[in-house]
Image 1 (tube, rainbow, N blue to C red):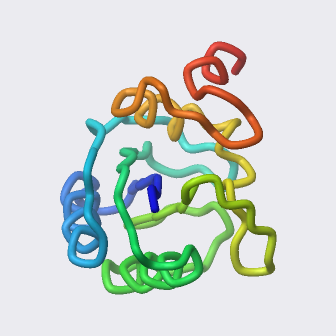
Image 2 (image 1 turned 120 degrees about the horizontal axis):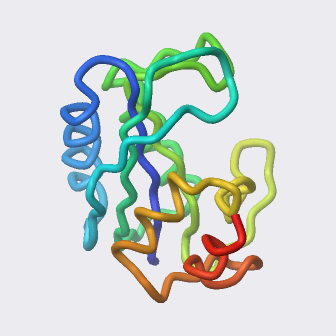
Length: 147
């Protein structure tokens, strides 16, 4: 299954945090594409440093729920602490899509419910997959023109 994962970091060595997360993800699924890093302003939450964001595409044999659990474990290993909602973080890993799966459970919503609003997800994704489609929303490049 094709999975799209967004990565973000705004604490510590942001580039190293993203590189470390990619390396950890590559241990469990096959990373096929990785965007460049994009520096972005924080969205929502308290005053905090700028983010470094990237997106990767991978092939996974894990269920979406298993993949989410693995991503949360990677965040924890890399020092993610969940104290302030939308607060600063060493690493943030968001599962954006898994194929065309539609899931709406207390633990996982796919496609990611705010991906279509987030330039910091859409721009790096379009960079590595110009034909990308966000299920239920359309082509990523067209969504970017609207936001």
